[in-house]
Image 1 (cartoon, rainbow, N blue to C red):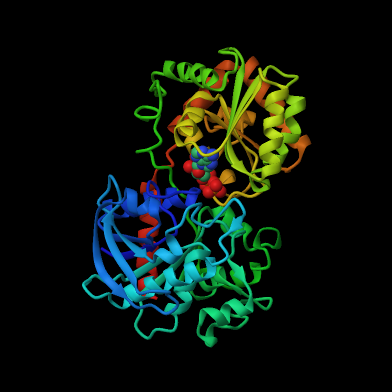
Image 2 (spheres, helix red, strand yellow):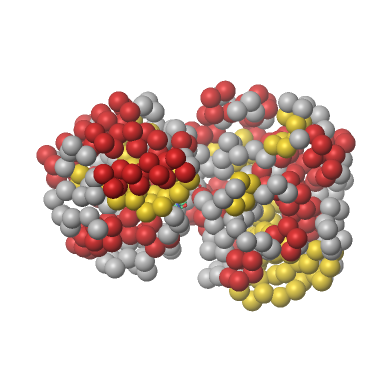
Length: 484
Ligand code: ADP
């Protein structure tokens, strides 16, 4: 049994902007189910204070370097689990309207101060908070917001082992040298081998350079970030630590994402009893005001409307696609140009294209259940969760061969179909031509080979990407880190 403090800036169902929250909400309970004492720590944003269960004050006031006022620590429980949650309550930094990293005008300018304070609170916990006897053997950090934790802990004589997981290397938390000085970080951390990145302060380097073990969220992404294309100048450092880097695939949380008992769905279904799927398709078409037709293939897209997700490719292909018998529903938000571009297309092709700009958990579930195929043509994708949900919902994913998409979706080649392995459509080049060619393959199979389509759905729904296996791999890694 290992004691683990899981430090994260977001966790489902308390607060979520993306996949990090899903993982933070799923991995700790899965590890606890294996007998490990895993606890979460995150900032006390207002949405978290509103949703966390059994909240009480653990530490009234602790002084922390950089805190405008002494910080309060609250303790609660992650809803529907037995995972203890520690909340770092510093209203000046965390109690504000808008998003947790910024608002419509951009990132919060004091993000370096906010996440340095959070990191200092994590370090303080490992040294012992008043009133808390528990101490972690391992601190598991996630993304740049917690990058300073391994760096600061590296200066301690007695410290827990540190794991740093890269969920997305393109977000690095890079700020000025002046910010480094202002934050009062130890000068010993300022070096090429440390936090310095081309004369600037890089939070993510704190994790990459100082953590005892590095992980990322798929084996393919673990290889990709060692190359210039995906490494953003950090590939040299990552390569130098390659023997300590592991690619561990994220799991899907089937407690939340299973068409047999998904509370968001009007109709439940399984591979054995599939009739609910077409009822959900009709419900989805009705929801979006599209013609209710069972004989037209319906594509879904859910996610951030950004280049990373290849959403620009989808937009540039769409006018041509409307010449075919197909419908597409889109849910997401992101780049305002893409948000508007998609809405323009929805107005132009109202019988085929429907768009909802925004964040809507219930609708995301209905799209997974009601669509026939799911578009995810990402330029890079550390792991990706929606393709895992799509597989479980029998909604064949159409993906680019990158990162976790390459590791989880098996292309519908004749050999893979014959071998009972094919679960979706995979293409290589991030180009309009390549996506168009794939569309032709999808349409051909959907309209001309319904038997094969149905068999692929069965393979997809039978694929197991639950958390159990990944949680065991993390548990082994913690053990591994503790012995050396
Ligand atoms: P990301 O790179 O954004 O983390 P992932 O595929 O790893 O991508 O995870 C995205 C998660 O966020 C999924 O659970 C997905 O359903 C959800 N999601 C993304 N955008 C939306 C939205 N507009 N409405 C509802 N859920 C969304």
